Length: 309
Ligand code: CP
Ligand code: NVA
Image (cartoon, rainbow, N blue to C red; front, side, top):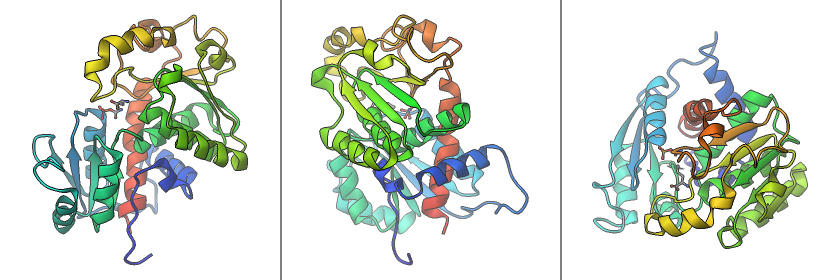
């Protein structure tokens, strides 16, 4: 692999070692072990370019790098301005001369791929309009931690077929977890991703279903997941979306037919009494803060896999 770098733009970039990454993350979370390498990323610097706001992604990557013996720097939405102040090609070439890896939160998956193509250092997707792969790793790490297994469980995603939903489809397919996504018909997950998840699912045993009825979807759920109805960049559609998605709110009625010990996941930020009722968000099934913590553990395992050579 000398000279080859590894980008994580899609969950599919972890297809060969996804479960290994999750297991490494679990090990890291349980604390330092005898014989484990200390400071595996000593001296490494992660440049973090943000085009959108962030709490979890920024802080979990920054603290994660510090815990691994490396460091990171935060570049705010006002600074680099890829495609406006400078081209993706130039930014990729310049940043590659300074840092050992780039974490990029972008508006566009196309620009994300352009940056990765021209960077000589690994690029990790910290969310774009198509995927949120690090979130998916943290999500499935949380399920593994709570349920002790992944294969054969029923994941149910309710709401907008967005970046988080797309990555989750691929992640569930890879680990053999069944997934139903219930969304309004004009807000389905990405068609190519659904097709890819179905194809992968044929090999792993994961049944992938996309439907409109959230009640039908939530029957027999082991995990119920939702995300905001208004993703970053869609603020102008807020009023329209909040009306359209109302039947997709995750609340106690919607989850009546879920399995007894179902867990509730949300990537956060959450909007109580919109995509999720306060009762569910703050209720006994919710594990959203463990899930947020797991961003850091999952990403530490990803960082070591990508930068730790
Ligand atoms: N879930 C997530 O990516 O959160 P932030 O937008 O705060 O980083
Ligand atoms: N779908 C949301 C996720 C936020 C972490 C967005 O893209 O804004």
